[in-house]
Image (cartoon, rainbow, N blue to C red; front, side):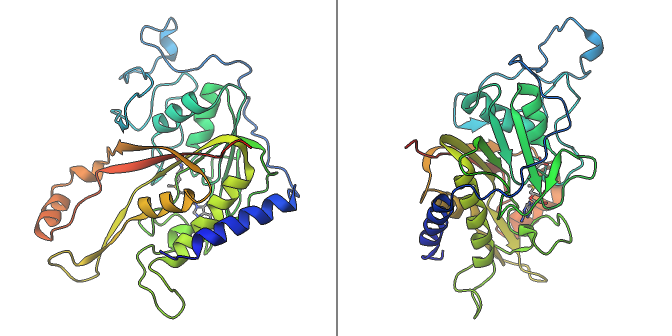
Amino acid sequence: MNSSMPDDFRKKIDQELAAGNNADRRPQRSKNKQRPDSKPYIKKTGHKNPDKVRPGNRPDMGIMTTTLWEYPSQHYDSQLGNMQGSKDYIGATPSWVIYQLLKRYTKPGDTVIDPMCGSGTTLDVCKDLGRKGIGYDLNPHPQRPDITQNDSRKLPLRNESTDFAFIDPPYSTHVDYSDDDRCIGKLDAGRAPDRTQQVMGQDYYQAMDAVLGELYRVLKPGGFLGLYVSDSWKKKKGKSGDQSGTFMPIGFELFSMMSQAFTPVDIICVVRHNNKLQRGNWHKSAEQENFFLRGFNYLFIMKKQPR
Ligand SMILES: C[S@@+](CC[C@H](N)C(=O)[O-])C[C@H]1O[C@@H](n2cnc3c(N)ncnc32)[C@H](O)[C@@H]1O
């Protein structure tokens, strides 16, 4: 890990705070109607309007009380739609993870930002819970006009203007999100140091450092941040055999970077329900080549200390 990163991170935050309001344009308001009150739209078993109840009911969601989270679906049942975000968007965040965070750390009417909003899962959960969602992405889902295109290394928001931030960033190069060169998913967190890079994966961590610095800047003091991420393991091309790949401890690295500015609140282990994990051949190579498939994601919860 680049030992100068924490200093860069602090310097950036200090500069941003000293600069004051640097917003030259405000985010577009969601065209979708916000719920005026606090009543959640989450479906309850035995709802009175059967037309609105989705068949194949998922269980009701209570608040998770341990640090091990599991739910038997990517989405929860809601009366605003059958799902939150898009199940076809590769790398979409499980909506119930965001739901749990918003229930605990926000109240109705609070402003929630997701700088890498993808298919809009965070915005849909915000609608369900009566929060004001602000979504950005470099490559917004084409059917989501409520997501503004933006590189999250610079957010068009005022300092200390949001109550909560959620982010599910690329985990190194595991998914090809877009052709845009600015996509952080093009930066290899396992890239070996060379003349241009002093430490492994330096470009990836520097990009994430800038994004996290922006989230710190726009969060109100006392506000919370949730970061959902997985470590990564990349097989060496063409090679097979004992551990012929690179392990990237992305979770630990990002946690350590965030801890330079935020106060850690907790670490949740979210069990992955990835269909790919059902594939027999993946398990066979994991055993034969002596590596592990990813079985969980981290959910890091951080707080920006009140003044
Ligand atoms: C894991 S996905 C997020 C999925 C999203 N939470 C959802 O549920 O659909 C990561 C997202 O980061 C976006 N991204 C990558 N680099 C970015 C950048 N520099 N600025 C903004 N978004 C970026 C990608 O386009 C992708 O949509």
